[in-house]
Length: 331
Figure 1 (tube, rainbow, N blue to C red):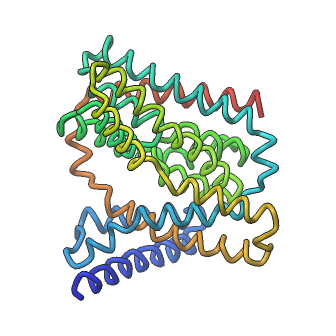
Figure 2: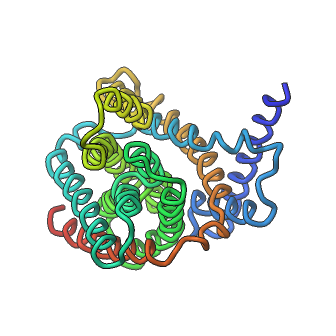
């Protein structure tokens, strides 16, 4: 009974932080409510901390994010996706490949970072943040220190890009579609990419999520590739174990997103329900980003070493800048 009560209280705390974020955004119209919610969460998490009675509820924030993305599928026009399909696919695959190889080369030949740490940095910065770090770590038997360095670096860039991307978007007057695709292609984690996309507009948010999910879907390919590279002499049993690990770590909510998108586009979900699902998605995002803010621990980010930050920074600046320039040409 106590666990159920703690779960409810934790979710209630997320709701309170979200409402406070919305209130702040009303007083400061230039600050989107999702970004405001994250900032409130960061403030609470790094001053008061996460109360014991709320931890089980706070940990649900990833579930709310996934549920919000699934419901958001109802507002994505399928014909728009199909019309941009080939171009987007090339952009996603090309961006991921370039990001992976640039981080790997910099880590091994310029900064002397160990192979496995470099691989975790490459996976986390090119595909889906900490989720990719964990997935690839399980495939290459990385140790806790290597995982911690890579995850800490990813979280640092998640924090920085939450602030930098909206600022660049407004300062450069980047078109909504271009901004959304840019965020989806180059930001590390799904939560921050979703937040900054919707902080610009609904159009930017929808494109950011769509493109980011396409990148996330490559996690299985990346983890398999790294597993084959590091464990070429593994037994069939180990291969089966890796296959199970890849299925467990694959973001299955992607299937839900696609299912809801199809239902809406074939007319099973009418316009009224699409609007309702969109509002529900926004409230779920509010809970998710409140939890994301609470989880961002500034003291932990300070422990990340210089080398991994330098590797990812150089790769990120080159890839992000090149992708933005390319999007202006092809879109």
